[in-house]
Structure formats: C-alpha cells, structure tokens
Image 1 (cartoon, rainbow, N blue to C red):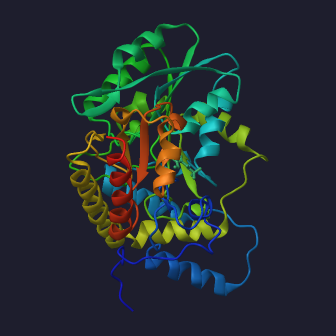
Image 2: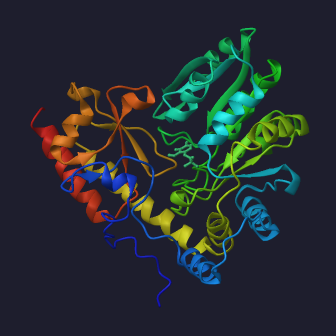
Length: 381
Ligand SMILES: Cc1ncc(COP(=O)(O)O)c(C=O)c1O
C-alpha cells in the first residue's frame, strides 16, 4: 500500500465523535479547534494495530524506546537533548499548564501572560486564584510579538512569579527568535521569574524561522523553566492524549511530580505506542505535511488579497490569525456561521474583531470555506 500521505483526500469524520465535526450542523465547515482533517501517519496506524492485536492492556509505563525517540527528535530538530531524568510523561499539555501554576506558585502570585493567547494560558492563573497579568502581544512591523517593555514593567512588581509563554504563539503564528528569547530570559533572570513554555506547536514551522526551546538557551534558562511539548499537533493524534514536560531543576521537578501524584494519570498505553512510532518513523509524513500546510497558508493569503482582512507574517501552526476589524462585524462568530463556516472567535483568546481559521484540511475544503467567507464579507463591504 502507498506510503504517500493523501492530504487532499476528504475524510468523513461525521461518525468519529469528533469535537470539531460534531459542534455544528453538517452544512457548516468546521475550522475551529486545533486538529487537522488528516489521517495519522501510516507508521502510527500500523504500530497501534499491532499493539491492539496483542490484546492485553494492563497498567503500563513509558518505555525507554519512547524516551530515546523523543531525545533523538529533539536533537535532530532543536540541537537539544532533554535528559531522561528531566522528562515527565503526561496525558496532555493543558493539565500540565494548570499544574505548573498550582504547584510552582502560591495563591496571589502574579502570573504574566502575553495575550491574546490560547485560552488555557490565561485560565490556568484565573482558575487557581493567582493574579493574571496580561501583557500585550503586539504587531511589530508585520509580525506579532511580545512587548518587552511591558514584560519588564510587569516583572518589577514584587509579586511577579511566573511567565507563561506560548512558542510558537497561538494565535498569531509567531516563532520567537533567539534574540527575543534571550531578551525574555534576561528579564526573567533579573527578576527571578519562572518560565513555563508551551511549545506544543514547535514542529509546525512553515517558514525559515527556527524553533528554539526556551531551556536550550543556556543553563540558567534550563534551571528556571518548564518546557511542554507533545507529538499531538504535529502528527494529528491529539485524541490519543500524550504530552511531556522537561524540567531540569530538581526542586521544580519534585514539586511538579508531587502535585501530579494521584491526580493526573499516566499516559494511555496506546498514546505511548503512537508517540513512539510518530517520533521514530513519522519524518517523511511530517515533511509532506509541512509542505502541504505551506501551500494552504499561501493559498489563504492569496485569497484574502483585495479584501479588508489582514493577516500578519505566519511562521508556524495551521491556525491563521485574521484581523477582520475593518468590517465592523457585531458578532464575527455568528456572521461566519451564517455564511457556513465555523471559526474560532478572537474574543475567546482576548482579541475581539479577530478570527482564528484552522487551515489543517484539504485544499478543496479550504477553497470552499474561503469562497463562503469572501462572499459573505462582500455583502457587508
Ligand atoms: C498552545 C496550546 N497548548 C495546549 C493545547 C492543548 O494541549 P492538550 O490537548 O495536550 O491538552 C493546545 C490545543 O490547541 C494549544 O494550542
């Protein structure tokens, strides 16, 4: 059977209990939650099939072969190799974000979050009685990035304890440069801040930008940070639920592990199998995916030319961040829903007037969605 990924193929997900496809009636094209409408890599499906055939699914632990596959993946892509003892295996990244806030800070501590951002980065402090300090993620030229002046100001406050970074940033599609990361690190070091870096989208780079894990900057950055990564977005296996944290600092690691004990289960056995297969054997699929997503990103940019939609540089993720403020829509989500497309409204990330459009789908579906979006917008121009 062919190994070539068929990203053009339309997969009927209507009977999959998919969050994405069950939210709206069948005439709506769902382009909201961050999963892609693509089959997982064949190596993942084969590994899962083989493991299911074994037929016994007792308690299990993370195999050293998965650890090795993660280390090799990180070394190849980021010239960074997390030590085995620093890795913590988890059933997802969101629980890890919330756990970091609860385990590594105290009630009332200030948690700094560049925003707009993926909503769990703001929810984690909000849900745990910490003080959330949103600092602006702003347009610099045509690229979204954190306002370093605001970060410095915020850090000066006595109760500032933790910075939650999202790199690559969702939404906004920014990959932090080394210069930016060093500047952030130097502020964090001056004010003795912990940095939790959500790097779930790190393998989805669609330009010449290079992803740099925060902990790989230098030894101090490694000692004051928690890095969160996962194969879930990269290989479209989010429903299997696996992520990992890298915590080099023994005190932070112990606090995190203690807080997790008995509350957060070990990753699912099949998730471990899928993660290992993806990291070990998914490279060709991953390369093909990146070139398909680049094609979709470029197509989207072409289609919005001549409209009033604005889209800044898009270096990573399959989540386009579109500024539709020129149209002065009262309720963008509802407006596009009526046009037949289910988008994520920017207000959910803290930016009303923006929408996030998931282009991790077949080109033909993207074409159809863009036709609907542009026709609807013409009617209000
Ligand atoms: C930045 C970011 N972090 C975390 C998650 C979710 O992670 P998980 O499914 O592993 O809990 C998402 C999903 O969209 C995301 O975009």
